[in-house]
Length: 263
View 1 (cartoon, rainbow, N blue to C red):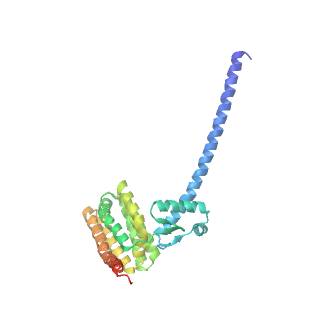
View 2 (view 1 turned 45 degrees about the horizontal axis):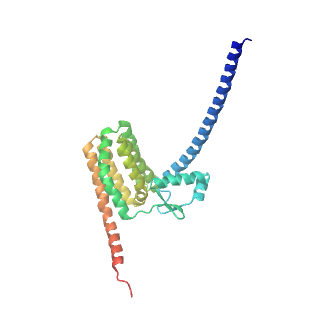
View 3 (view 1 turned 135 degrees about the vertical axis):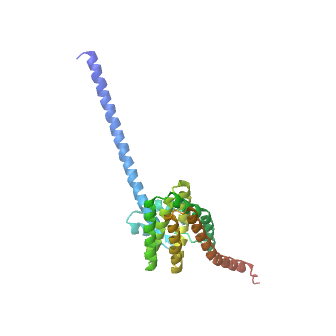
């Protein structure tokens, strides 16, 4: 073997070694990435399960969320539970306390403030759904509405809450406006705990079925302005209905504060 052949062989050997090292490094990086993804997926699964339980009313407002109990409930360790609770706290669905986490307990005034924001958002949301929602989406919305009607007729609270949430979720998707959908989704999350309490009353469930039926009919007929009007009137009705209890509670607090102190 001459000098030239020796140099070529040496270069080939060097390239083989470098490529082998790079391959091993890439394999290690890929393996590490897969492990991280698997961890994220577990956390996301716990997060999604918690959200579903919150949306479905399985956890009552004001309840404490104990990591150990939730870990046993979902069959996982406490780490993904802790991560999921941290994420929910960032979104405002749960609150951090000295003893861990708990669900928020809204006052009537808190509820009214959120409804005032919905008064600004729901009409354009309904109009966008009527204008831009596809025929397939309208059928999905109608399917969710039928579930609401069936649950209301049979007085099944949990099934009604689940169907009402599905109806609302589809309505958000039908707007085809990313910014509007995101803002409404955040408000919906903030609203869900009090909404679940609101739906415990059979009369409120019946009103919701009636009003959502009117909204569905307007969307089906592509009545853009009509859909916005129906959404606006429903929120206004809720505000009027809930304003009186909030005002009475505020007056009671003011009266207690104004009472003269005993000497």
